[in-house]
Length: 228
Image 1: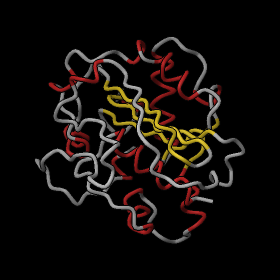
Image 2: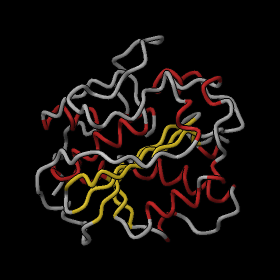
Image 3: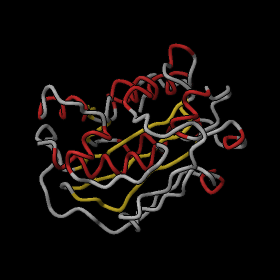
Image 4: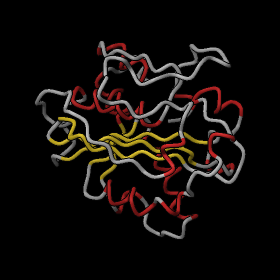
């Protein structure tokens, strides 16, 4: 998710956030210890959402809420993806399947981006390259309705990573892409609709502190059933 879609309420140097306490079973690890994520994690967790319809444009029962963290604001400036988080919903309910990985970007993380997500260069030493995780990511997304908040940002970065990995097909060839930011703007026209704004409007607790791809994807998964 781009810096422009984030809250700036935390000062530089604020402590790393943790997974919200109201989601005790959704505890992908916080950024301060990414070492366990050298390999992609597919985690099983109990369903926390009651039966609800998919968003109105879904047309299919499988939705994946996705978020990315990056070294900077634009892949056109050479920035890269450093974290991917994705959470699966079946018929509007969390299925318990998650995809999460940190990535080695082969470049420095911009300070402005690090202030948002707290991921430093040192934390990415030894992490896998995107090319080694591409097949797993595409398999997780295949046939789904992939929802991202400001999807143009996430899809642009991931399509760029696919190209750099020698994969010609973009995400749209593997899943249907939906932008939850556009859906939120349609539902609440003229109102602020960053993910933080939507969470507050819906009364969904947010104790993240710093942003993270898995944490943001988990929160977005709670928003998705309301966008219909």
